[in-house]
Length: 99
Image (cartoon, rainbow, N blue to C red; front, side, top):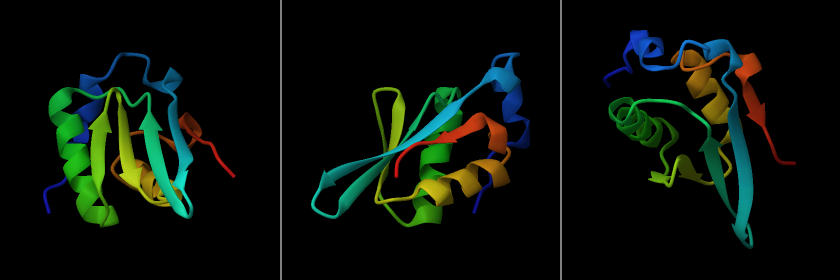
């Protein structure tokens, strides 16, 4: 599997430390959930690669809607681990919302 480029930070703004990524969960109906990733500032090329890698890693449907990335199911902890392990953000920059 191709990895995301390590030097992705050069594509971000200079204030990476102030960057906050919000991971939210919302109930779709019954027992179904959608996990959203908001405020992840990436170039379109890297965002497309991230969506592809997330889909393969999480084994679920991942797509972009407006400026958010949506994953089917409750994938909050897996997304946090994925973002940290690929160096896209630090643990203190991630805010996980939901119950």
